[in-house]
Length: 240
Image 1 (cartoon, rainbow, N blue to C red):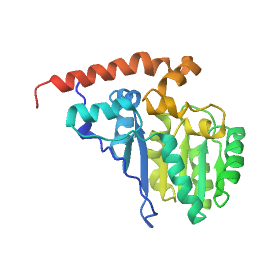
Image 2 (spheres, rainbow, N blue to C red; image 1 turned 180 degrees about the vertical axis):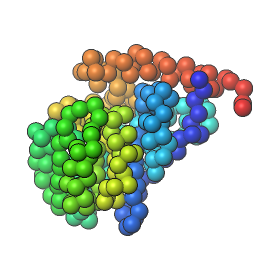
Image 3 (cartoon, rainbow, N blue to C red; image 1 turned 120 degrees about the vertical axis):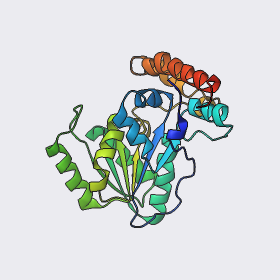
Image 4 (cartoon, rainbow, N blue to C red; image 1 turned 90 degrees about the vertical axis):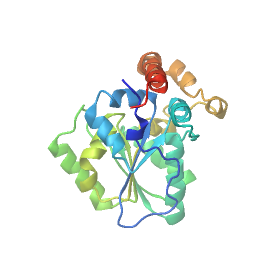
């Protein structure tokens, strides 16, 4: 199987102001999500059709340089989150967090009050199930559209969150939709994000693996080697 990053649109420049009347879906991609997407057509379609797809993984940065000679910076979902919190605070706008537990959402609310006091906070913890049914989705649509937030952060883990956004984006009355997964736990303090030292080394994944081996072992020991094989195969294969 060949890595076909030309199928994807990788961008690192995020909007610095709202585009009224236009909806923007932002997703992230890393080696693990790439491997999943190559075996999950709906997830792949959700990523490919993103308005902005940002490289949240040093493997993606490396692949871009080796395959196309293009230098791009890694942009973590956490950085995406902070970017929009700054913008929301400056404009006294509404934000909606969809996902996680009520207790986690409450921790996020309390932190926002201290750090971004002008943001109008709203949230909803959906039922915890593999796939939300029509009744669940109808309830979510109603709650979000009554608020009409500028930014909707979705944290239901990949690929569930990206596929949910892909299926429901046209119904939602929002400007920006961001699937940011683990950021809910990082920002709430449930999980401590690795220090800048590890991030700058491109090894943010290592402390996370040591802290959550049961959850992250597969992406480290299966997806990462598989992605490397994809990359090597693509690099040395004859052009089509």
